[in-house]
Image (cartoon, rainbow, N blue to C red):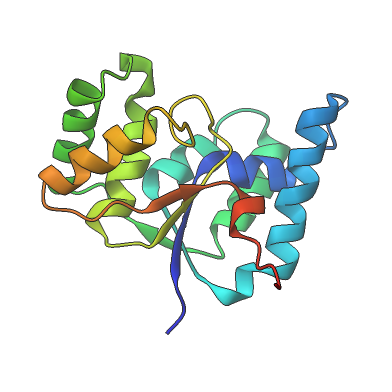
Length: 159
């Protein structure tokens, strides 16, 4: 059985976007494409109806590209358990209200027992200060948190 990974919207966006002029973002886009090409087949891929909603926003042509990628994954619903855990994350981790979708991504992955959450959201998700708090709230709520990571962190390396 393959490990499970929740693909958050930033990964889908970086995968399908035109190369950025910003050097850091361009590097992240390239790392995303490398993960997608080299490693995605090692995982069972999931996203959620929230990723579908976020991916469908904006320019229609770009949205179509993002939705094509989303169509390759199993789509999870926003359950009452996920909504409740997201509310707990907002309250207990002291995330700002605008981070509600970020909390919901974590909650959907956790309540579905997924091993990893792949994201480029370093403000609220792959954040070394917030990660232990997020994990604690998930566990206090009865759910094992996913390992929140970026594509290069989920690349296989050989010793």
